[in-house]
Amino acid sequence: MKRFIHAVLFIIVCLWPVLQGNACTNFLLSRGATADGSTMITYAADSHTRYGQLRYHPGGAHPAGEILSLYNYGSLKHQIDIPQAPFTYRVVGFINERQFAMGETTWGGIEPLSKGNSEGIDYGNLIYLALQRAGNCREAIRIMADLVATYGYADGGESFSLCDPDEVWLFEITSKGQEKGAVWVARRVPEGYVSAHANQARITTFPQEPARWKKRGPHPAISSLHLDYINNPEVECVYSHDVISFAKKNGWAAYDGNANHTDADFSFADTYNPLTFSGLRACEARVYAMFNRVADGMKQYEAYAMGDPKAKRLPLWIQPDHKISVHEVMELMRDHFEGTPMDMTQDVGAGPFHCPYRWRPMEFEVDGKKYIHERAISTQQTGFSFVAQCRRWLPNPVGGIIWFGVDDTYSTCYCPMFCCIDSVPLCFREGNGSMSQYSPTAAFWLFNRVSNFCYLRYDVMIQNVRTYQKSYEENFIATVNLLTDNATPAELTSLSHRLAKEMMDGWNMLDQLLLTRYIDGNIKYMKDNRIETTPTGVVRFPQQPPYPDWFYRQIVDDHGDVLQVK
Image (cartoon, rainbow, N blue to C red; front, top):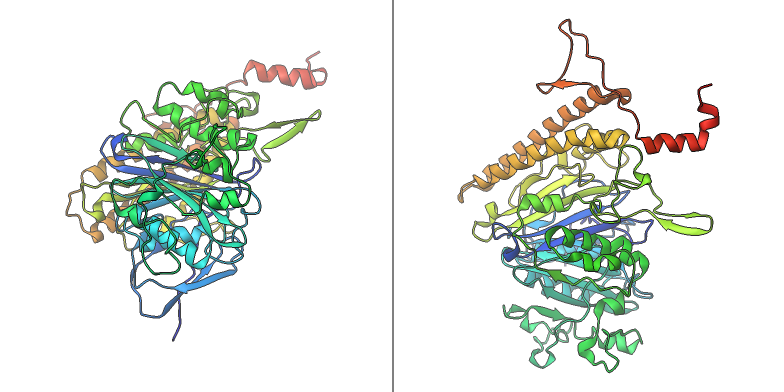
């Protein structure tokens, strides 16, 4: 049979969730929890080596016998060849033309499972295969289960966010080590609720109804999986048939607080990704931060988020105290633990200008004691992030949007890319620059130039960024809301390109404003959105605000004998 080698599937991955490493954050919002009845998921790909670009798969029919070659993103080594599907959907980043979207966070898990099968499909390719082949969450769960059972799972623990116009699901998976395949659990987020995950497995106990499952058919790769019931809309939890028995066989099974436990007390998270201080403080704390901003009563979980495993555990999902808009979701991605004991803008590490970022490593030692810097939702090393929005009352081309941004979520601008576009704007396009190659037309480098300059005098400079950000995002949302149901893919492609260009033009102006206004630590006066000058055209003498008193005292305590005026 003639083989057709498909183009390399590039994947987006995040490294293990150790304090010193990279990590990701996802939010999940059901229809009943949002202001307009859309479903939404978010994803921040936080990595010191990840470049911000929007990947694109055109989709369409594929010839019989075509072979798909998968390559591991981390090593770029050939991973596995599998048959191509007869038809694949168009994929824009992490959403496809059917308004199905996915995100992920990595948690690795226990040894010897964290390395995955010796061969098989890695989790990044699993995402892209699901996006290319599935029209909704339930189809994606079945497809991913079939794929890892058939070809193996060459990765460790992952949490996937799945979103379609009707439902939002959380899917957690880990390998079986040297045994082919994976164990997993998937749960639907209840209507009116929100959930989140951040590099820590979150599904503990789960509904089990084995008597109602039936084997699906003779296919040897899937005959043992309890998946028949997934198409029933009443079913809100599915799992691999051996998720419990595999753990029991290896002596790993953990149970949820019941000395006389049964399988009903089995905890997926406690078995395959037991909590540690790092898992709490660097991972679960980000879930707490999101929950804390959308609902009252979250302080009861503060001690848990700060690293106490015996404190009251965060629930898998909560009901927010108000309906959440798409712009508020964007704002939820912009959190530094403000208003909590972990607030990164308030301790001395923020410096005299309240910069909420700490350069790595995150763990350090003083006088034999170990300490950490906080790991917040918003962080400087983000390659890209998005808010995926799926709107069931609209046709797919108009209804599905990936609001895409690059660099730090606090200073990015989320620009709408519709799920039907047939090309990606230049500023987000693959190949336009890289982590080792600067490109003046790449959004990633422009946004990094702005944010990195802001780090020098953060508290005042970030206000300019936030003003631009709010103006552009509100304008983009208003533009999207004015679209008619019959907007064509060509029109939506043109609109996505136009808005991306407007964003780039605006950020170039912002970049120039920041340089001219804040050069050399000065703050020039502004009038009518222009730097103020005298009638003869001379720039007005700039403001030179002093450091805060506490910072001067530190200087004196450290070096006062040399600096004192005598």
